[in-house]
Length: 311
Image (cartoon, rainbow, N blue to C red; front, side):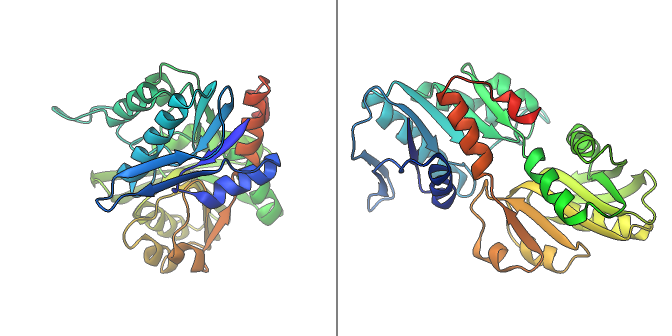
């Protein structure tokens, strides 16, 4: 087994390699003067089971091309099996046609990865479960819930907790987390989104008065939904509001918005390499996915069960 990394999230790749107690594959992923990507593998990978760690977050197009070219380089170097480890799957929010004459870009990206030569895909908290069906190759979707549940129990286990879904679409995810937290009660934020990136909280479904609320979601981008939801929960009598989000996209002024919000903290994973602003923020804390992803990689290489990680 070999672990290879692109430039998208080297710290995470190194942490995964350290967990597995193997070195990262010696390879260079660099650019020519015109920004064309060039990949060169400096060690033999013939007949090897190779895992490429490369989230496709910002800049999404560059990181996606790096991944595709790495896959092609490994295929031409006669690797036995190539697994694309994509902790954050870019374009996942374009998983359906929201209107006429619009693309389903998540399916296109799945096709590109398959055609490039990937034999398997390993992702974390895909935005929508049906994205697994977009691939014609085996695809494992890991859940961050066990990591987050352990952290919530350690920090808030002695408080009167309520798990909150920031929208109706995230109820299944929130219910799964609530079950891990000794069947904590569940509330839902009913919101209306008039334009992408903008939302207005309408109602709180559930009794949050006197409770410490923990919001759970897969992606935080602009942060507007979380900040609005925190204000609405506090206005309805919640004692405090924290948020646990798997993928911290945090584009534009999101970090400043979080810093000025009524959230006690925002906890994100390192599926996307945190920006300098996020790392310096007193309101943002980062959990590592390296042990979870590393253990999944070990089990895939050993041909043992991955789903038993979440039993």
